[in-house]
Image 1 (tube, rainbow, N blue to C red):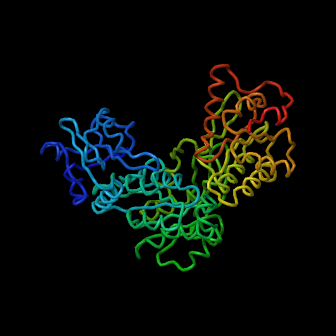
Image 2: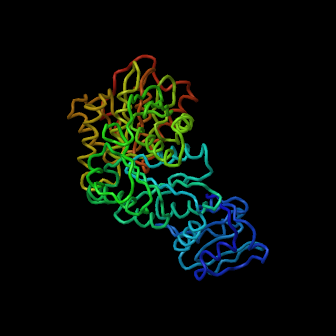
Image 3: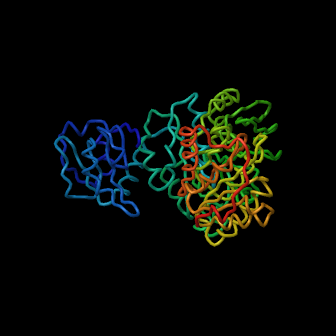
Amino acid sequence: MIETRFTLHDLRQAITGQCRLIGALRDVAQSPIRRVVIDSREVQAGDVFWALRGRHVDGSRFVDDAFRRGASGVVCRNSSVRPPIGCWALVVEDPLAALWSAAAWRRECFSGQLVAVTGSVGKTTARNMIHTVLGSQHEGVASPRNYNNHIGVPLGMLALNAKLDYAVFELGASALGEIAQLAELCRPRVGVITRLGDAHLGRFGGYRNIVLSKMELIAALPDDGLAVLNGDDARLRRHAARLRVAAVWTGRDAENDLVATHVRSRNGMLSFRVDGQSFRVPVWGRHYLHCALAAVAVGRWFGMRDAAIAEALANYEQPALRCQVVRVGGVSVINDAYNASPVAMRAALELLRDFETNGRRVVVCGDMLELGELSESLHCRLGEETVTLCVADALVVCGEKAQHVVQGAVKAGMPEERAVAFRWPEQAVPWLIDYLRPGDVVLVKGSRAMEMERIVHRLIGEQRSSGRVAKQTGRRLRTPAAVSSN
């Protein structure tokens, strides 16, 4: 749902030539549109339901449901719609094209500075950190949730208006050309690339195309724009050797323009220094450093002093399911279940390795999706890295690729009885309850479709109902054959 500041009349002007109005009186046309919603189940009184056609379902089927829930109007392709008295419908040939037209119109109304963020991992965190910094002194908006695709970006742009100083948008892609299209629509002046990796590797067809895709953002910047780039990534440096716009390279290497020193991550606090200024960000893990440095670079570009940027970052709040540490019955659970790719998994394993504890380290992971022909080998490598990089004491894997991860771990030296595989996340909970004891640390991570947070919720539920999820004394582990459910 998107908060807006325009009217039905404005909307009709924005998508003129594409729409036909059904219902509504003249005075309604000047009534403000408060929110735009694309899920009829989220509709509240006065909202506008934008009925987009999805991969499996056409949103026009839910127009009546939206009106029942209190929608004042709908945008849909169903010409037979009959709005209730006092309500309206804009009938368009293509709701998505109409959304893009409305977004382009809102961009014309916006005179502030637009910052766009992309990368294989860290996009959402960088976007939120930049928004936290800029929002401490300016008025602006950031794209909500993970609205970073061909629907989310134009939808988020409906919140733009002339009174805002800035906007921060996240741009995602799973194929070449997609970021170029999104950047052409939102027309950023500042472009940020976080970290590159092998997310969506199968769709891109190779790592080189991933780099080229992210560089589409930089190519779209105006001549007086700014590129904020991860200077510790050698491959990115090679592809960005000849930049048309000014650039700020960030990282730990001394050759960068913005260099972080004294980097430390401990007890949920990332600390570092830049040019003598100390920064403390309440996040778990060193892998958030480049996101924080991007926020520093953008804050400076907006004219903010380092001390003010540091004060803002000290109040940063991390979104759900991203390296959130919860205590459950004496066990520390790192809930990093939002998504996963090989590079993100590696960062999470490093966090688990560095987590201060006298107990055992347990990796609970799910499938990493969209890796193409390299999927099997990358899952096998994940298993190896739970041993060689993280030195985990036990491994619990869920999903279709679980056996490949287990095989990699066993090959790297993990005892077979400590590496177990399940098809579904819920099936792993009894094993974990039987194995865990106070002081242990558990990392939970997997691709979004795996919904690995279900394990965390089940452990919390067990704690509330029985008072514990961890045994007070150790017990001999059952063998994988006795607990696997493939």
